[in-house]
Length: 231
Image 1 (cartoon, rainbow, N blue to C red):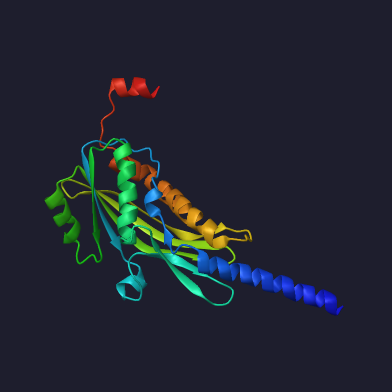
Image 2: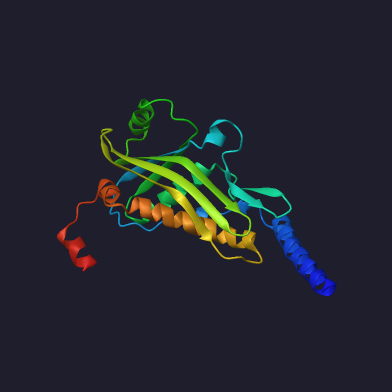
């Protein structure tokens, strides 16, 4: 009986050691610039994005604006995960959306990162300075990944689309909590480094493929030639 007990203790210790070593050896960065959400948008001209991080802990200066999440070991050690670019989280998400919009037909995409929205005039001033066909206000209310035995991601992202006259054309918001790695893995931190950008990309795809957002951002007028090419 004592032999069985010793084996169980040894197995438990081995599992704990595996997770501890994983947390110690894992990279503390996630490459969010690998994202490129696919959309049904058909754009042309210039588009500009004003990306803003309104996460509570960032606004209170409790954490840096390039934090993506954390990896926790069974022994209580916590490793903070940052963007691989070392730039703000809002910047990397905005730049990833820019890549997607260029693929959708836009000629140019400007990406401005701001820390605070001071007033409703901010977006108007942004449009006046950049003079885009479409302006996107992208607001991150919450984004946090947490990895221990599995990985969960909490998100709350809002987009508002304006034309060059500062008229609001469409808006949407997506939020929730998602278990993106539900099964026990020997190296959950390594898996999270792939799964977090992958699933965040899926979240952005869902947001930017909402019908009202697609319509608001589709500036190109379909011609007969376009129709024939699509068929």
